[in-house]
Structure formats: C-alpha cells, structure tokens
Length: 192
Image (cartoon, rainbow, N blue to C red; front, side):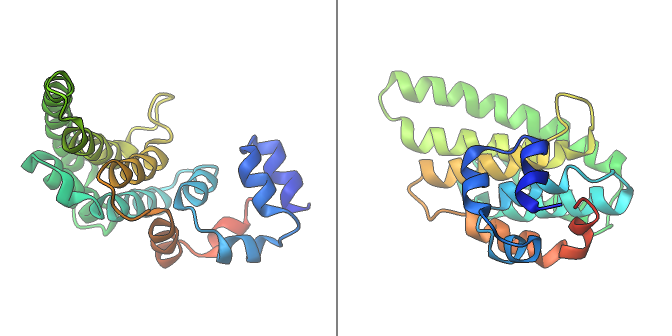
C-alpha cells in the first residue's frame, strides 16, 4: 500500500499528506522534521510496555528542551520522571505520583497566567504555563483512556508552543531527531 493511501485512511492532516507526496515510507521516516507527526503515527501501534516506555521517553526528552521555562519544581520533576520511566528506571505507580504533582503545578501556572494577562505582561507567564502543561502531558502518556490517548503527541505540541511563546527556536526538528534516536523505522513499518 502506498504511504499516502495509508495516511489518508488514518485521517492525517492535509499538511502532512502534502509533505509526504510520493516519498517512500523509509524516506518519510528519515526526512520528517516534525516529531509530532512521528509520535502520532507511533500512537497507531499496539500499546505494549516497550512501545509505551519509548513513547513516554520521546515525549519526556522533547519537553526537557523547554524545562528552563518551567517555574515549579513539580513540573521539572515530572519531566525527569517521564525520562526515568522511559528508560525503565521507575514504574507506572511512581510516574502516577509525579503526574498528580505536575497537574498541581500547571494549575498554579494557569492562575499566574490569568494575573499576568490582566497586568499586560503575558509572554513569560504564557510560556511557563504551556511548558507546565507539556510536563503534565509527558507523564500522562501512561493513561490510555480516550481523553489522554495522544498525551505524548500533546506533550510535543505543547513543548513547541512553549518554545514559540518564549521566542525560542522551533523544536519540531529536535523532537523528530529524538524520536528517531529511540524508535526505529522497523518499529513503525509494521503499520504499513
């Protein structure tokens, strides 16, 4: 099956379809500069423990790129926990503990963002809030309910938005490189 046909059946966005064009699956994997797209495709795989850990690791490492924007230690600890879980250093129960703390941190950032907008100093608060949301999403990958099935993709998207809000470099390319460092083409090719 041609890659374009497969992706159309999966409901990918028009931008991704246009980018893929006539590329082979191997070319698309090697040339993709958007970690969000690669993780989205990885989410189509069955969720065994190895795939889950890799997904959380990629999300954690990507969000780690905006860790400097986080105001609260709970968010930073959540990023570290996502990476530790991805490497097999901690289990799901430990990761759940960090998720609850990360949710508290992003609620604090949300309240600060509202105050900052009222005072017309929104940029730093916006970046910190989005980074905190990214940290929570990175650890929320373990919950595969309908609401958080794509938390790893959300973590990457939010990390990119946090970087943009802080006028930082675009991290889409970095997230795609991180993805390829941990998830091989062969792991994705079973979808095609």
